[in-house]
Image (tube, rainbow, N blue to C red):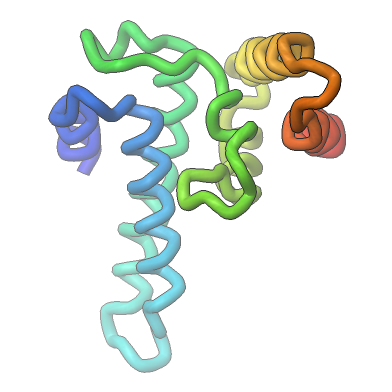
Length: 148
């Protein structure tokens, strides 16, 4: 499964590896929600496969932020600003469960650097806004990151 996930991240020149991995994680979560082990003899085995898929997506998503060179010439992201600053009604937003899994996985492996660059990017976004522009989304993200 790991080679398939890694290989797929390189197929789309217009999509960052992080974006693909976020989408794959969301699809695995959705599939897992639809599996009923009490009605499906292979349900538990399917859930284990999806759990591993989620784990790999989280691991490589974090690595794509911290070590983008690992993914060759693919488009790069170095922080979560673009995802966190999006309107809450967009499909690309970061689910809280994804952020929790990312934080747990990278607590001792570079999470501080990712959060630091994200906070810096959000601060720059707030600083670039004029007084009458919509600053609420950026402030909401800072509040969320503090609580998170």
